Length: 305
Image (cartoon, rainbow, N blue to C red):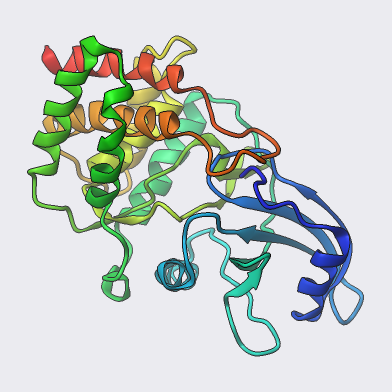
């Protein structure tokens, strides 16, 4: 959640006024690379504190954003710890800010905390199991992850020559599979969770969500939560996360997971090579592609046996 579309105090105050809030203070969030996110302190009509989050979308248009807002409302109704979008005076979930789609949401309790231990890995596995068992009836309009992968395949030419052929073959084999039908988050990195007193309090950033294989979602998550600083898998963390997943009804195919781990590592290597959406980003900006180059090396070697 970096900032590519800077906003002034007066611009944000105008936005909040259309929802019945008064702006007190704000700051730009500094995690992630795809959208502009602002953490806001405000007051409601009764002068009660109202912590909020405004997200300005850099790549999604209004039509593409709509299914995600339906998804968030649906998950909130199923008691997942997710923020549901607020409506303005006109009853709209979406607004336009600086010419781009934007959404205002309540800021759920908790803080970012990037520490990893076995208990947290189990909690993450449990949360994924809950998500994967949610009703997907209203969610048929979500984008297909395979289309994202097809788009990212244009970055294969940027890979080191020794990886291009193997990476292209891996991607081709995965794309040949029929799409899965499980709701997945698609981006459950550590910066997309909030914690309060050692427990998960919020799951954020559903804008990579889609219907696909649960193994792919687990792979994305394992590649962030369960590797060391050199990209090497940490077996104890992996075991804890998978135990949390299976212990709460999650089902997975181990051989498919092995392939998905390599595909997911490649997916984020390629997306990081694609870079940020704006040269004017503030905050974290585009993350280091080499992090996922190292993870990919471990995962592709494991897949080769």
